[in-house]
Length: 197
Image (tube, rainbow, N blue to C red; front, side, top):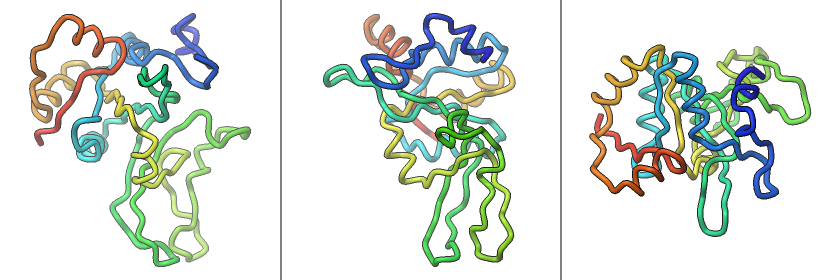
């Protein structure tokens, strides 16, 4: 609620008649305002799984935007922000199905029900005892990437200095661009981040 109040008129539940719509750059601005190290980036042109899993391995939660708000053929930003807090290694479940999952905190999940961090705890191996998982929502990796067309993300480091050191170590240096391109990245698409490992 505090972040919603701080976003003020930029927080919108509906844009162009569709759910979602708070401009993406607002999320990064709010995180920085609270002292976290972050940037408004996009993983559309790189292996997003490598970037996201590297951040989680470092203990860094990641705000990601799922869905897409479109105006005609243009995607402006995502529809809903959720926080990636963990992932599984590939495993075979009790039904002998290969699984690879991401774990999220989603303030609007489950729909029309009370938020509860224990909703993610389920018996996946069939022994009758629920396993504990981080977050309150599990999404299979392939389903998540189908819902992540913008690639918009915000790593949430404890400080900007730690964020900048990670970025310099793990992401390729951005290329020079026009004023229009820089403005577009700052307000609509986020920086085009490329993993270099």
